[in-house]
Image (cartoon, rainbow, N blue to C red; front, side, top):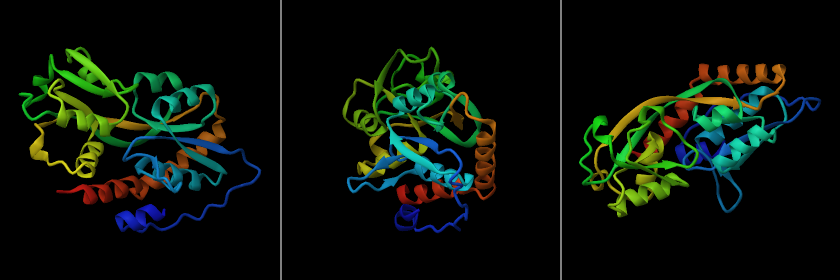
Length: 244
């Protein structure tokens, strides 16, 4: 939890759980996407989802790994049994890859728009040219865009919004939109309106066939962190870091 203490100035009470060496190892997959999961050149790992899944793993009392992996690969690995749990919104691909265990938290999905897109409301999104992250789907927008361009990450998406008039907007998780605006040293005045699309649930997805006793340990670990509003603490720290 050093990242939280140094970058965000936050301190959480440690959970004293001792791994049972006789239990099977849990394999978490964290999506490689700022601000949710990334690895620095020195090998240190960070991110909202990474820290949350670390805390979940610690509270199960099981031995675990938590690898940072490109999102599309996390889905393939969950479906293939190489991962036991990932965090994802209920995109079509995630629903096909694993079982929903329980809701972890809620997240606003927004469309960031270009300066002169003419988009001022949700209805204005109809017939526009939007960018999506690879392997994502948004039922609230089904049939609305004229065209959809797929990009690998939010950093590229925001740069395209800033530099290219050929697109009208990009679909972001709200924390990622403001995180990258701050990191790229852009100003909100350089963009158009931010349109709320929907508030979606982030779910713990587990591999099909994961034993029920392991699922129960995960449920209890997640419930204990939710009672302490652990994720909300991470999110508030990120908001303070990226505030204008």
